[in-house]
Length: 451
Image (cartoon, rainbow, N blue to C red; front, side, top):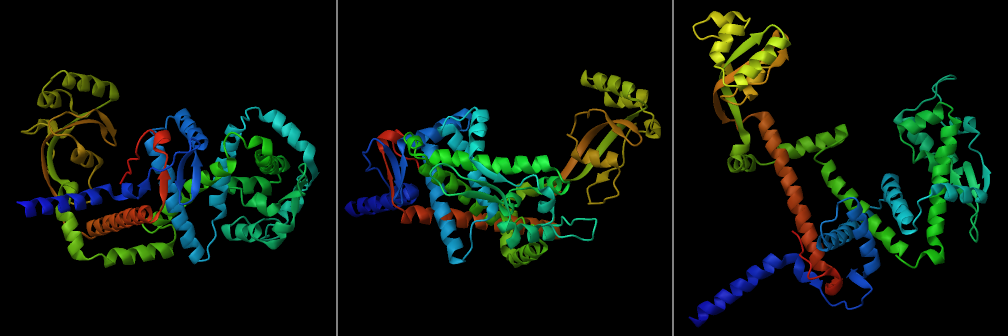
């Protein structure tokens, strides 16, 4: 009996350990009233945490402190992991990611500094402009490659050439000097990398006003960031800490997006890689997946249906209302249908409609395949007039597990599942390796580490 109890306790401890998983790596040993968490040595203050909590509440996206904390932890752990991977492969964060980080951080700064009236901010900022070349738009356009004397190229290749050209980095559109700071500049390179195709088109259309506004937008952002760096403005919420949390959020998103690109490729080369991966999925796994999720692969094999063809919408509306009130479908066929089959032995009866993948099925027959059994449809307009249909019988079956398109679909689903399992494993490993400390009192209890 004693041996059984010991074995039971050992099994209980093992199961408990497996269930707690992530939660075991979290220590509740912070008593500082100003700190809510320390994640791998990086601090999250109570004030910063409360700030993000309030922002989420404003847009009705706040669930609980528990959920927010778990999100901040996973953002940091996955972001640090992704940054480490990029470093090993000598890859830098893309301009697009950095742009997204700065755009969101700009909103955060505005909230923290309570900047609501941009008119005064813009007016004040302009006093620090030293020189502007935004009116010289012809010079800007000259940086784009020309196809001939009259036409400017705006192909992606030409755009990249203009964007990353060394000359674009040297050409200064605006220079400024904020108090107690070195001279700052906005280059053509900086302008171009923040423009979408519409913006490039506006510039090439010699829209000097658009060019000036685009440069001013970048300059104003720089001025607001300058205000955020002023000592007197770093007393409520640490802006550097807020920037770090915003940065982690976008880097984590970039990491998750990178996992999706293999399954949703954008280039032909990537599509070829995906096709090879799909073909490499063992048939045994495909078959096992089909059996396990068989109900998902149900389809209509054939239907028996009848219809009423009506001459105009007014009549169709009348018949639809009569059917809704309980009129007999067969009687409505005889009375109102303009189709020759109304005179048959079974008025309005359509031939058995088989779902055999035949693309030559008429519009009416295809609609019948999706209609609910035993309930008259709403009237619909077809190439031959207005129709109301009634399905009397639906014969269902399963898709052919040997069908090539189905095999490809299942193989892709298996690849997605494998990626999700790998991500879950990576996350669990990161939690296990990390040092996570939480102020239980500020959080309002223990953290429920989600799976």
